[in-house]
Length: 366
Ligand SMILES: NC(=O)CC[C@H](N)C(=O)O
Image (cartoon, rainbow, N blue to C red):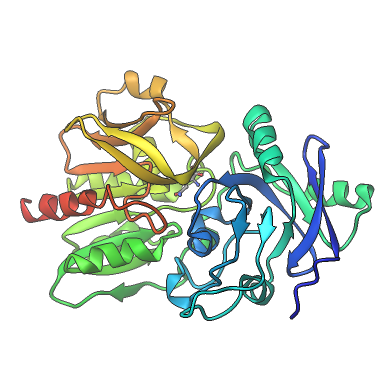
């Protein structure tokens, strides 16, 4: 279980660039789309967010692991990432409440990692060249072998991953008698459920491919479409569910992947971003109130500005102040709205939690 600083590890990017580091977590080989998160805290929440399924995370904060891990800070049952790249890794932790070290946690979860990497250089590289696949290994340094493994990693564009992380069986949270929310699980984060339950909701979480009639059969007061991994475009089953909910004109709220699916259901397209938004300090403007929010974000796809301009079904409600991309929409004439960012945060600031209150108000006024 001891952290062996001496064991070398290698990183091979799709464009042939190589970085060297040392092995952390499990010894092995792992591939996925490389992406970076700029949050200074919240590594455990990031690793367990199902939206990162199939990706290799670079934590840009230089020091990771120093506060260990704590079971109750999981956003799902276990880490969902394929691997991790870190600068200065701490196998020791100083938080009294922590259950275990990050080294033990990653090892037990079977997550391969590389530390002592110049993460600033990697981030600049991705920022210049854009999102790409990567293979990381503490098993072999042989380039031909790594290249072969890298070729097996699927391209993120067009990839349907939501059904892979969705619950197999429907389940409920919150007290019976509360506001009934039917949530379509495309990779839902625990703090979304907590945010609804804290507001008096009784939530039934449905597997991604549940037939819409079965969902309607539960008789919910409001509907929710969750965050999740992969490309939203191939999610026909979820797009059809949203269309049916909109037809019945029920209160509907979507977050991140759910937001993208809602846009697609209204005929607005999505696209793969250059390298995405992942961090906990992204500024967003609420165009209806004029107020700014500092938000938690994790997405590599976005709703197309061009496509929305020619739509009479959808209006933009929130805009990113860094790059003017679309951060929130409402469906014209319906009780439906969604945001690209994460109002439940975890990790991140609480500026956007009002959106859960807005959803509850929408249901109460219905
Ligand atoms: N957090 C999410 O729901 C991410 C949505 C989608 N997988 C994206 O990368 O854009």
